[in-house]
Length: 471
Image 1 (cartoon, rainbow, N blue to C red):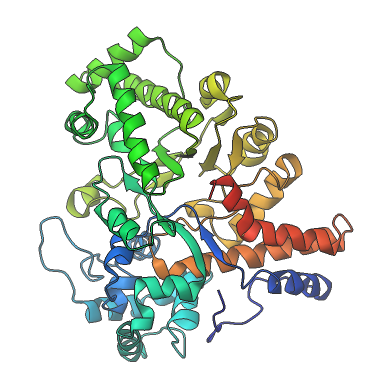
Image 2 (tube, helix red, strand yellow):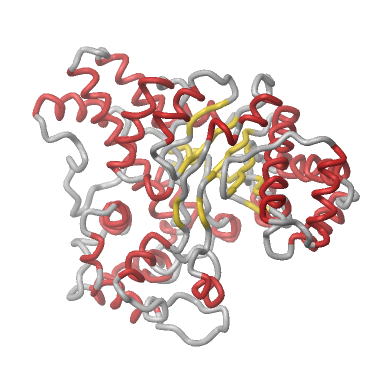
């Protein structure tokens, strides 16, 4: 990850106190060029399989980034003006006009992690000579366009440039996985890996659930109208993902509720789900039972189970209807982890083959519930700060709340969880800088010696994620 800082300050995010700064600088310098391990994210496998050039600054940096879109929407900026595609295919701004609009409003991101990531992408990766503003928008648009035309900035070359050792995509259970199959034949299958995301066939409130479950049955030659047959379909589909290098599953749920029902109760819920006759409470119970079933399959096949709970999705229904998902209207919600995971942990919590990595949008749960739980249950590990909290302050709050109870050993390292390829090195750099500052304080307070702090900094920069995700 050796990249020039461009117009960025080389000491950004390091402590201002001179004593802490000296220790943190030494720790960060020991990790800044380590390989990137990216075990969870949402980059497009087509980028790497096809390896085509990115086309323009707006399409690469702005229109796919819901962090940017939501802030601009809050300030009254139209998504049409930002070039965001519409479901009805009505015209939206062309890339240059969208970029100009973005530049006019870039000051809204002052002090936010979005500015850190984008400045890093533009300065350290794309070689822009100065920070974006309204006056230089056209010049930087042309500069970025010329850079992207260089073969050294094709997706695979960028993985080499960033020092990405392995990157995992997130793929639906029904995905044909054609791009991952192509990557496997091209010798890239162990570097770019799929992840099994079955939400469309585990959430009875997902659009087209019954049709999706029937499709799962066709793909696996299983009767998915029967509970045992449906679970067998997941077992077989997971095996297909593993054959292409997957080591993990991922589950996004509104809550952390799990359940442990009898087989007749499970069948009743499945029949109701297929006929559209479940109440909201029954739908939540179905999702909870499926989490417990997925944990059982992970205990069986060794796939690491990730649970991202607590997001209320697509809360702007008009926006969802006109633009689709991932437009910035998802919101955090309170999450009960002790009560929620009770059924799953009491069924599978001691299974030697299970590893469950949890992510929360409810920061109040870290010290109160999640750190104590990870500090007890052998299967449970804490994922890094997620989504609204993967900021410098969010990372600091996370470390301060979890380490004293869960220790460093129960942390799953870092993952960037990004849809934007150019933000991968930026996000890992932020993690490494803030981690160095946190460890520096422990050294200065004589709670760690420098050699132990250096070991932890290097471990949490990459090796912890390799272990946690069985890479």
